[in-house]
Image (cartoon, rainbow, N blue to C red):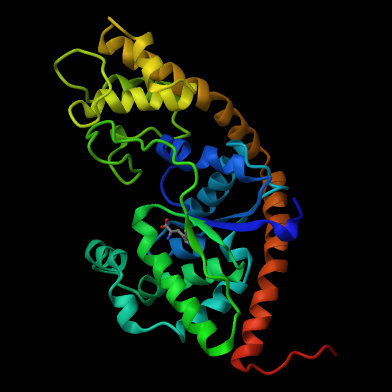
Length: 336
Ligand code: TRP
């Protein structure tokens, strides 16, 4: 397909905490299927991350780790643009302009802002408040058509659309109005300890499997995964959430249907179910971890990829930014 005819997908990833097999099954592994048909940007949002306090050395490492994880999961950094937000100054510049088209009332209503204020009462900073306008800048800078997001980011995307429409209403069609990307829905992975809730990296360790967990941790966590007491392997997310979650994980990673998975385990106990799950998780994660390790060991190579990709992102970003600056009436930049 012609580059021009392809739609643009933009995704922002927080460099905080660890990515889980939930992220892998629900999102990451599907991204590799998009790389030929869409122009995809995966931005490590380090500027968003500092809205809460970060340890500088940890943040620096995590940015590289997230980028390496994406590449290790099969995203080709030549086909996709995988880069750090702070490396492309247009994000901050467009954000300022969008801030002037965003109302205090809109930002005050954001549920994530209210949650974060409650959680970080000692550091309710202006960045936390204007977080959604930076997110809008991320998306609009690249004229993204589609944004893969979880339900928790829906409100921010709605606001992005409102800001873009407001701006377009004044200055003409400057921004593409983005939509949520709901792609091929990978099965939702639930917490190992409370299988009625989604697996989340912000829950305690034993609730999730990180993509970078070592084999011992994976074995231990799956062994301790919550099941139930009737002892029968059957797929019933309502009545048997723990067992069904393990079955979904096996099916998703092995490529078998749920029915086949259940059939294969007929007459066996939960021990066998957990062992099969462990096998599938290890089989999937071992090569990813090896590639991740290889990338992290050659930091210069990885940083080179990020530099190249930031340059590619910047070239796209500047087109939008210059147009926006002209529209709002900033003085022209003449070449000397
Ligand atoms: N706010 C998003 C999150 O917490 C991360 C993010 C930042 C993002 N900018 C984005 C997601 C742009 C999609 C598009 O998950």
